[in-house]
Length: 595
Image (cartoon, rainbow, N blue to C red; front, side, top):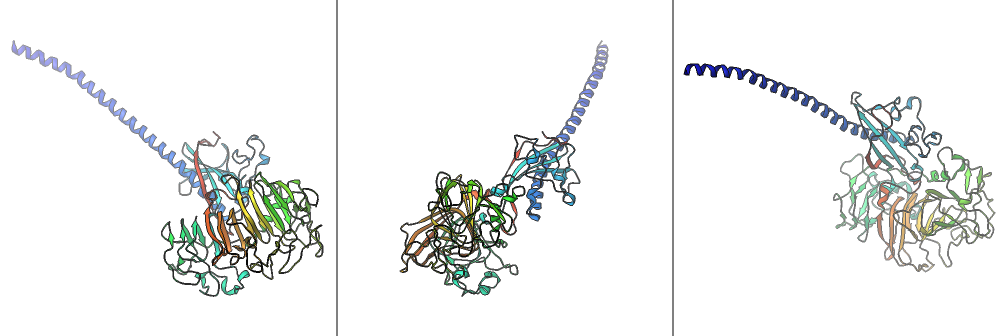
């Protein structure tokens, strides 16, 4: 019986084992299939993730590639695809490509990155074996006003696309609160030997005889600073990065001289960032500011001066008013826009003020009050003598009601020099102060607006020059020659102004000479010279002599990191840096169509 039961149990076990084995086998097969499917899915996801990351890298590569094109050709900002929606200045009318600010480069300059649409081209990221590509679109509508370009770049890898928008701005003088080409006083003012002194210290300028200027114990430079030369620093404080010129032949050349103006050794100077200055290449100054004069021509509206600024002739006063207007007195002006170079014709748009001596006209004693030209240039030129120029005056002629004299004690007929004023120390025999027919501008007031004021000769800041709103308003001052803080004194070296302290909100550039206080060594203590903005100059100017003049309080306008005063001059050679960039939703699909 027992044997029989064992036999039945064995048969039962054999019956159960078969389905059990089959069940286990099926489960293992299912797990194997699931594992393979998971592995394939993971591989696809990994590839997709890799492509997604690669597409962003391709977009960044597009920005860098476009920057390299700008570095090789500073006019490259004019190129783009007029069929691009990003490039059109009138987005409300996408079909109006005739009004685009960009054109496609042709011939050997053809650029595949300007492709648009399914049939459009893509540029290939070098070294990617053709798997990584990009396109970019250019918006240069703000270039002429602020020097800023916007680039929308899209990268493509496989089926993935990603887009970024970057603001590109020219690197230049306003990257620094303080910039000089040479750390010496202007030889035109000092009379020092030009051949000996106008060279960098690292290139062999002598230690004495060239009136180098030092930063002293009361000086605080609250912003980035650069000199192509070697600075003298004595107990001064720099709160941000300082860069100096270098000797290409010597890696151990001085970064700065710890000496005062008399070449005595100094200690106690403070560099808050990075410990001490670092090296940087020479940033070249443009020879003149005549590029800004070009911005007042009416015959270039179809090329690169779409909105001409205002041209004034001879000594001119400008007072900015806090309501967004400015009052201009310019008796020598006959035409405020011109055509041709040299000019052969001119016009008198009401927006720049009307010539003449009637009420609210440029030649009247009260001047003309007009709206500040929006994002534009005001240029003051010397009185022309060329036949055919609409602003030409005969050498013996004078505007109605204007009496002026020439020479070292000259008068320009519009209030300078003031009563009792002695010849300014900065005057020279070759270019005296307050000359009768020079393109000098005398400026002060409260600015509401965005404008650059440039002068063929001198700029005099005759009072406080401030913004109504430091977040909105912006001013550039560009003198071909010196930019002076007006400080008239009499024959006994006493000051004639009763104000104390001077505030200037502006980016200041003296192309060929200097920024300094007039009569800096006369008139007693004048308080603080407070500059909020940037200062750039060929030669270093003096603002204090002994107990006379002003102490310094210079503060950088951080907006210059991403914008600039309208059409502000750039160095002879420049690069473009990215001031802002942000990722946006993909602009193009992988097939090239707009999303």
